[in-house]
Image (tube, rainbow, N blue to C red; front, side, top):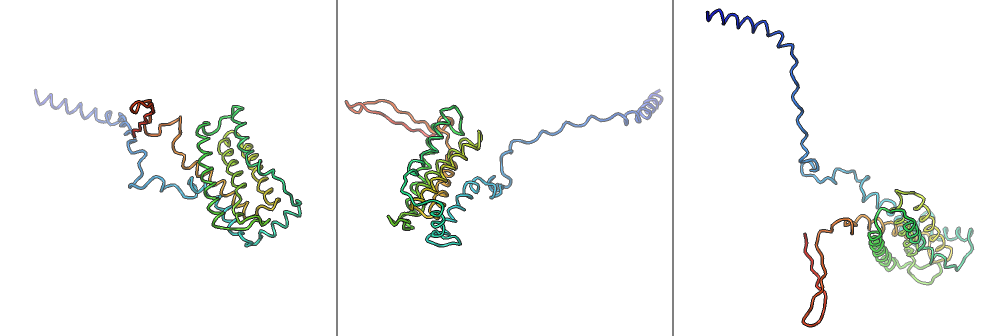
Length: 269
């Protein structure tokens, strides 16, 4: 009896084997991707090292200013394939010598454009507080760098008034302001920046017309202005009013003996 049952069970298994072989197996669920190390660099190499230098923010910020400053240095003091004297001669062939001071006021026109666009409700890249901080930082970089280079270069102006010709501070100021306008509103319209740069270029031309600067001065001045603005944006990591700056600062009234005063507390996070 047991032998008969064993034989029947073996027969059933042998007959069911082909059918079981034809039944498709359910695929195993895919292994979820490991996202715990998503932002880590392989082999401990910094992420910045994988980005090509020609596409880095530093290169894009310094490329054009470096070309302008380099050309200014190349033609400095009468050198180069197109000398300062030749450029000055051609300028006065087109425009007579003048003593106009229009450039003294044009340097602030890009900032007026910036304020007017803001008043009309066009939102820039940064809020007003951060824009003011960027302007202040840019001005400090530009004024200090141009002053140092002026003192070191000791180049005489075309009119012989002094030896502070290289680079042009007026041109640096105008292009700094134009660069800020362009950076703040380029996502809205390129025409804001085009207008500001047109004004800055006019300042450079006028400084040559009034014999206050050579071509090397104004070209390098444009480079210093643009570079100063770019450096300010590159180093502006903390977004005041938008993002924590990583510390708690509080000011509270207090008394020192019988005299009222203020108590400043600072606590890093």
